[in-house]
Image 1 (tube, rainbow, N blue to C red):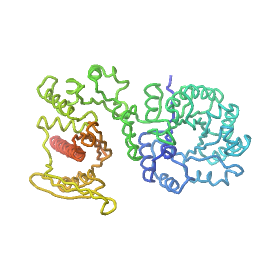
Image 2 (image 1 turned 30 degrees about the vertical axis):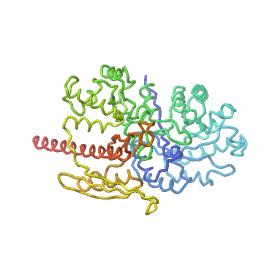
Image 3 (image 1 turned 90 degrees about the vertical axis):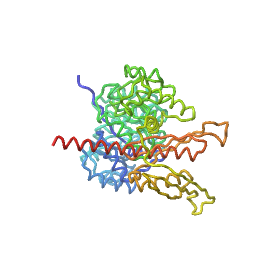
Image 4 (image 1 turned 180 degrees about the horizontal axis):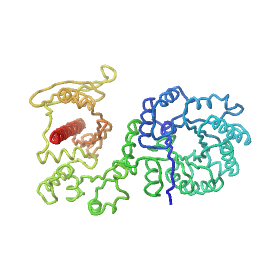
Length: 539
C-alpha cells in the first residue's frame, strides 16, 4: 500500500512575518525562499503583494529566481463587498505577483460575516465563489483558507460547510481549515476535520493552526490523521501572537512517527532551521524537539551509559536522521564513562582507565566547584582538556588591560573605553577602543589588537551573552559565571568564564572564544595540507 503524501506549505514569510519582533528585508525574504526551496517544501506562501511596497518589490525580484522544488504563493483576501473581482485592487495585485498559486482567505464564521464584514450570509457565499472562480479563470491554482473555520463550525456548522462548498463551486483546488484564534483542542480539530473530509470526499483538505492554547502542533497532527493532506505552518513556529504550527516538529513527526510521505530532506532539518533562525534574528530554544542543541544531550551517568550501550534506550530517534547530533554534557555528575566519550573527539587515544582521564575528571570537578559549568560551553571544555594535556598552544598573551567608564558619556553613547596590550610570537600590539560599557569596549579592543595578526577574527560575531550570579548572599561581591556564544556564520560555539569580577569573567570567555576559532583555523589548514599531499601522491 502506497504511503499517504502530505503537502507542506511554509508561511514564514507571511504569517511568520506577523510575529512580534520579526522584520524581514527584501534580501531576507529572498534568502529564506532559497533556503526553503533547497530544503524542498511544496509551497512557499510569500506574502501579500497588495499590503506594502516592500512586498511588491519582493515579488518582482523573487519571480526571477529559478526555484527547483517549491511553488510560490501570493496571499490575499476575497474581493471586497460590492466590488467585482476584476475591479478589486487587491485581487489585481495578486495577479500581478505572477505566482502559480494564490491563497485566498475568506470568512467562514457567521459572526465575522455579519459583524466584521457587515455582509449577509448569502453575500459572503457569493464573495467566496466569485473570487475563487475569477482567479481560476486566470489559470491560477487556488487554495481557499477558511478563516476561523473551527470557531465558525462550532457556532453554525451548516454555514461553515456552506462556505467550503461555495469555494469548491468556484473551483478551489484546496480547502484549508484554519484555527485562526488558536484556541481549539486536538480532539475537536480531529472530529471536525473528519466531518469535513466525509462531507467533501474528493476535496483536498488542508490544516492551518495557531498556537494560542499550545496545541498547534498536536492539532495539525490529528487533522492529518483525520484526512487532511496539506499542512501549513512556519519553520520555527513563530507568527502572530503565540505563533503557528511548527514545521520543524511536524515534518519529522509525520515522517518518522506516522510514516507519511512529505516534502523536504529530513537530514537537512537542523541546518535549514538554523539558517532561517539566523536570517530572522531569533534564537532556537535549546530544548526544542529535533533541532534544539539539547534535543539529544545527555548528562546523567545512567542515561549516558544506556545510550552508549543501546541508543534507543534514551533516544526516540537517531539524531542524524534530522541532521542533529548526540551530545554528552561534561559535568561532575557525568562519571568517568561519560567523560571519555566526551573527549574522544578531542583525544581519540584516551581510554577510560588511563591516568589522563582521571586528571581531566579531577580538573573538571575542581573547576565546577569554583563555579565553572561546561555542559553549555563545549568550546571551553575542549580548550581545558587540550591545555591540560599540553596539546593546545596559546596563540596570544594578554599582557594587561584597563577600562574606564565616564558618566555622562563624552560622546553621548560610548561611555566606556578600554586599553589593551597583547603579545603574539614576541610582537606586541597595544590598542584602545570605545564601547557601550566596559565589556563591549574590551571586546572591541581585543579584536582590534588581534586582527593585526589574525584577520580571520573579523569573521567572529557574538550571538549571546549570559551572566549568572553564583553567590547571591555575597551581593555585589558575588562570583559570576559568564557564557558567551559566538559564530563565524559556519559554526557556533560557547565559552565560559568565572570570576568575582564580571569584567574579568567576560574577558576569560572572550579569550577562549577567540582561541577556539584560531584552533579551528589551524585544524582546517592541517586538513587542507594533508589533502593537498594526498592529491600529489595520487597524481
